[in-house]
Each structure stands twice: as structure tokens, then as C-alpha cells.
Image (cartoon, rainbow over all chains, first blue to last red):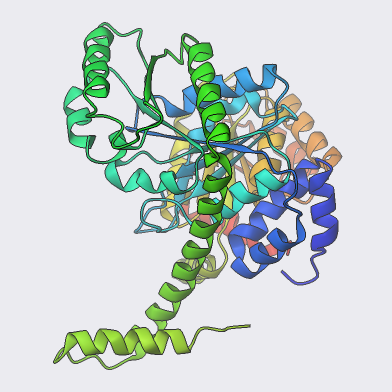
Length: 316
Length: 149
């Protein structure tokens, strides 16, 4: 990380050089200090990126659906960035990132930039670097920034903290799963997408979801925006325009209500909190392995560890 | 067993320096078992592996390498079209300023073609039966040697 010319890299990235964007993202992943420097060097005026979070049960077709949305936005002349999150193995610390397989038709399009992000042991899957990447894409002028989460149950609600619009994707024949998820990700959607609606059981699942939405079982406590439900078949390309229209409807709603900017503030605050967590946990690991811990008064010992860990944090 | 110790030392180095590898299936060829086995083995060795899926063009592979900013590219070809496909890929990498990216090739490659492939700048060719350990070791070595930072 020595001798890197950040200013040059940033100015190339701003003029659209893709290799420079790719490099910038790597520096963000490698070091929080560099990430912080990068963010402080890119002006925040004129940011307008609409961050769309896509979550939902594994296998519901999130990646394929995103690929269709990319086509839709491309046709409207927009620039689209995708942050595709996939899990890191807790055992080997390696990762196999395959979300982009379904999006490879867009790989060579100069208006599209897709980056895979491993979770690297962060609960809920959203690491500091993931959020910092969204922030950079926004500052580089991308119109739509789509975040694909790993889609595992209730821990996935972190996406609430960084997306303007949340799509919860599900598929027919997952009725029991929907029940199970109700208290978690099934509450956070602004738009619910029943994908794979070309399947025979689709109507029944649609009726169930519709009922759940109308009775307020889905969508939690959102009052001013009633969550919407739409049927799609990403593979057949059906329902994509309807979905995109609903996304725009939600965008107008958050713009008019002032939520758009408030959500950017929430995202930035969340990014700083994630960074603080990362720094602190790393320090805590260090001190807790070197400290003699007896277990007589575990509460005081825990407080002692917290104090010790905070003391060691480099504050420059 | 010097080999095993070497590999262990290398694996330790990947703890401080994450290594990103692109595994790509190039050309009209749906035989992806080999690519998947290698991708899986590299993941289990602690590397971050991006898999493109089947039937990729050289342009797609190079663009993916740029967007993901990978350290190493591994290509799998079992169609017999390795000479024209790899020629295009290697030229394109140079053209896009990625000429220093180590590239490995795996698959059913006839022995007489190997010198020609190496001349193009391909770092090594892994034939069927290559032990996974060897692939892991050479991949990590190539990534660490490149040392772009």
C-alpha cells in the first residue's frame, strides 16, 4: 500500500476508468484508513445514487432478477453498480463468489460495474467495506446501486440501514418459510417480489402474500408507504417493468417525504458504527488472548477488557 | 515432506493478505466440473474465488478481472479451442493494461500445444490429474510474487 497515488486513481475513477474503480474498491477492502482517505477525497456534492437492497430466501432468484433490472436501467440510459455479497467460510476464511454468474451478460457494458464482496466473518453479512463501497459508487455518480444480500433469514435485516428501497424476493412453494421469516426480513420490504411466478403454485402463494400484506402481517409498521406486491419471472423476463415502476414509485415517495436524504445520513452513520466495531473487535481479540482471565467475577473482567481494548486503539 | 511445509507457510501468508482469484470457463464449453472442483479447493484453502460460470468470451473474462480486481486468473477449457481463445485473452489483457496478471490454464490440453501456450505468457498449464495442492500452491505463489501494492 506504499507509493499509491490516490489522487490520480480517484481522478481516473471519476472519469470512468474501470480499472481504477476496481483498484479503489480493493484499497477500501484492504485498509479502513485508506478507505477513509479515499472517501474524504471524493466530493459529495451531487450524489443522487438510489440504493436498492435486494434480499430474500436463497434460491429465490435474486441474482437473475437483478440482471433483469440492470437491463431495464441500462435501457433508460442509467449507470448501474452492483454490490453482490456472498458468505465467507468461517472455517477456511475463503469464499466462493458466484452471484455474478447470472449477471455476466452485462460484464462488458461500460455503464455497469459489478463487484463481489465476501462477508469476511461479519454477522448479517454487511461489512464496513461493503458499505464504504456503496458510498464510493454513489460518489462516482452511479444512478442505481443495487446491493444483493446473502439472504439468510433474520440477520439479513441490516440492509435496512443502507438501502433507500428494499426488495424482498420470495418464490412459490415456500409458504412455510414465509411463515418462519415473518418476524425478520418479511417485515422490512418496501416491495415484495414473488419471483418464479411461472410455476404452478404461484397463484396460491400470491394470494397468501396478498392477504398477509392487507392484514398488515407483512411490511411491519410502515405507515405512510403501504408495501407493494408484484409477481415476476426473472427467467422469462415477466413483470420486470411493473417491478421497476414500483421501485420508481417508492423513490418518488422517499424523495417527497424527505426520507431519501435521511436514509443517506443513516447509511453514513451505520458505516462509521461498523468501522468502530471492526476496530474495537480486533483490539478486543488482542487483549482477551493476552489477558489472564480467571472467571471469578466475569462482569468486572468483561468491563476491564473493554477498558483495556479501548486504551490500545490508535487514535491518530 | 518439504512440499507440505511449503504449502503451509504459503497458506499462513494468505492470512494477512487476502488473495482473489478469477476462475473462468472460456468459450463454447459446458464442462464445468473441473473449474468447480478447483474453485472449491481454492476456497477451502482460504482464497476468495470469483466464478464466472460457463460460456464466457475473452472480453467478459477480462472485464470481470478488471471489476473484481483479481490477483490471478485461472481459465478452464475442454473444448479444444484453447489456442485461439487464449491468444485472444492474452492479447486483450495486455491491451487493457493487465499484462502482469498471472494466468493459469487447466483442461484437456494436448502436450504439443503447451510450448505455444507458455510462449503466450501463460504461467502454467494444469493437465487432468494435477494434484489440487499443486494448483493451490502455484496460485498463491503467483499472487504473492505479483505484489502490486
